[in-house]
Length: 239
Image (tube, rainbow, N blue to C red; front, side, top):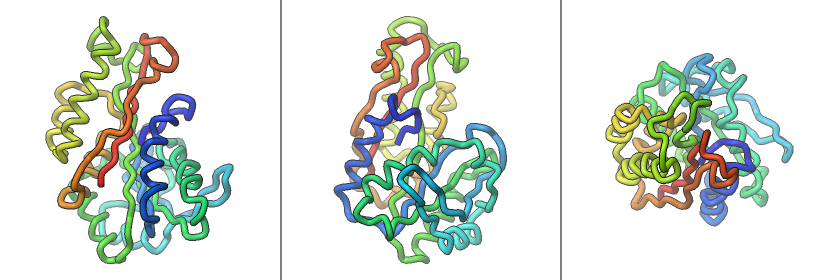
């Protein structure tokens, strides 16, 4: 799921949330987001959250077990100025409107102290021990292009080149190749802010997902008509 302003990335995220709405309601949503501010560590918080749709409850028991099974700590610092998880919650509440009393989630913000395989292993172990059916959400935008983002690898055919750059990354995701995906991001110096959450999701889906579908892709420039600065958004579903 992307996590920009709703006017920009909301219609893209809606494609994945439609799939969630039409699927079996899970016991738990695990939302993994990046740490844009650089504050704090790879962490979760055990508090309930509030949106304009009301309170959304954290699965505190699961969160405590997750902390015990992984490198994840309980720390609110990384969440103080982080939007990548909170923007998902109103969508989640809307598509779960018939199950709000049973809706539970666990937020994970990944800092710079991450180990992808260790993180995925800890999450997987906790899910298996809990016996719960979990839906995993990785929150990430794709290429951030333009001088405002300090990333101008090309200056012509921006629309086509952005799509080509993001399509290369998406192919690794569709092939469940977390190592190839992260190497691609490194080589291209790609500005995919949630690359690590995506890689963790890929690790979790290995041996689970039978198919990976790109539901929607576009950029903010397709809405604004200005390619001087633009961000790519992709909605990808693992089944």
